[in-house]
Length: 59
Image: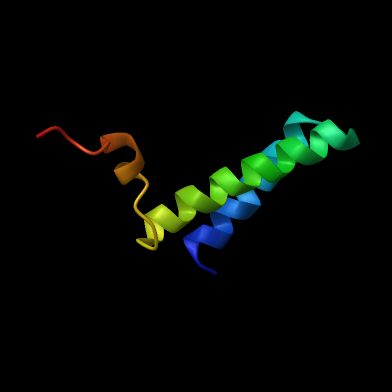
């Protein structure tokens, strides 16, 4: 299992622990799952999250 998948599972489990039911709980679970997936994919080297924080640079 890749770290991206582990990150997705971890994010979903945190969402379940933080919320219980309802549409708001579902939306939070999806958002936290996406964040976990992104962090795991960054750890695998599939995506570069740091490019978002750097910006374009000047000059």
